[in-house]
Image 1 (cartoon, one colour):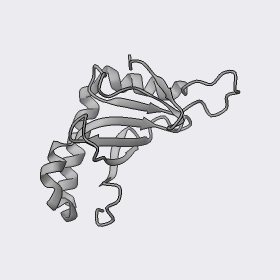
Image 2 (cartoon, one colour):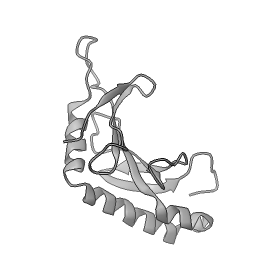
Image 3 (tube, one colour):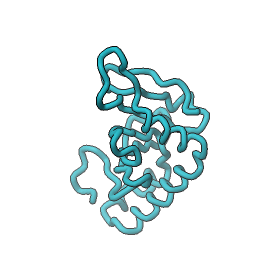
Image 4 (cartoon, helix red, strand yellow):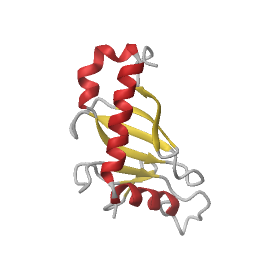
Amino acid sequence: MIGTLDYSEDDEAWLTDPKTSTYGFGFYISPESAVDCFDFRPASALVDHAASLASNPSAITQLVKSFLTSQLQSNPSLAADKDEIQKLQLYRVALMWPERPGDGEIELRTSLDSNRIWGCAYIDRKPAPHLSLPGRDDIH
C-alpha cells in the first residue's frame, strides 16, 4: 500500500507525502495517458509499480545507496559535496510515463525538511546515470 494519493494542481500529478509515509519516501504519479475528463485518475501501471516499491522499501533504498557510493567514486566533481551526498536519502520516486512504468526520476534530500534537492534518473527500475543538483553545471 502506497498511502493516500492527493492530486496536486501545481504538479499535475498525484503525490504521497514523504513526511507521513510508513516506508520513508513518497511518490509522484502521473495520470493515465488517454482518459476523458470524467475518468481522471493516476495511471494504474504507475500505481502498481509504486506499490511494488512500497512493499519492499529496503530494496530501492539500497539501490540508491549503492548508486550514491558509485557516483562518489567515479565522479571527481562530487568530492566537494561528499559529506552532503553521504547523507542523502530517497525522498520521492517520480513515475511519470504510464507507457514506461519502470522509468522516472528520483529525488534525494539530506532530510525530510531539507530544501536542497539532488536527483537522478530512474531507468529500468534503477537510479542512473548521473547524480545531479539542479543549477550546478559542473556535475557529471
